[in-house]
Image (tube, rainbow, N blue to C red; front, side):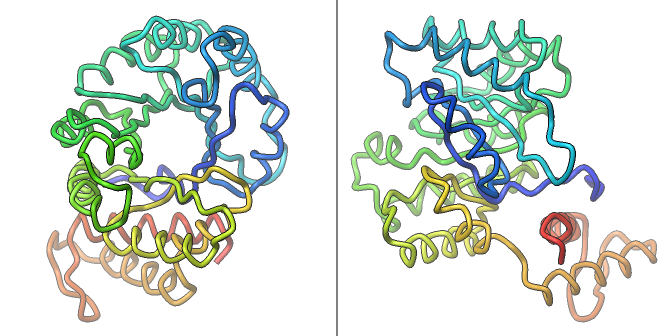
Length: 288
């Protein structure tokens, strides 16, 4: 069971185009738990080499002296392309790497292990985050989620997945895919991020979709604009009452020696306590 100090909130995930490094400081101050510099969809082919160098340079900036720093990620191009392999080698060679890399267009768990073989040998703390946006990845989601201890989250690429499944990118048509990812991520004990909400002027719609995602087992949601972060963070944050109950149940569970026990009317075992640890980790990060 992962101790509290090893858990970190991953409620909100904000993309920043690698072609616009000037937007990185604003993203870092947006309140997002994760900030991802995007070398894939956000950068045209002719600009990828320049963007790669600019992106790697962003991670050399010193950490802020106070406050909690967002987790900094780099979305590379698909490892099945020359650009993706060049991205991966650049991360491996970097003196100051990102905290993690986001792998797009993944199909098998082997791609995760190859990424770690290349970039993780020098950077042992590098975390792997996986975009699930292909039929193959959906089929292999359980194996991908458990490919290595360094896998920290799955992110649902719903628009690409909708095209692969030949459906419209709506909540009901993608519920099957979401359910499979909830199963895979929960089974591996890792985070799960829902697809972006593209209605930038529809805050009610964003809050509704984020709330629905949380209810079915997602732990966070990706964002395409800083103004979406507050609503997403609120949707995936515990209330004061939820945080207080989680702390009480953890304390009572740890004070006894049974692996399976009923305390205050709730059945407690390792997976349930892990969920309460996550609740407390988020509560600590936002000061409740």
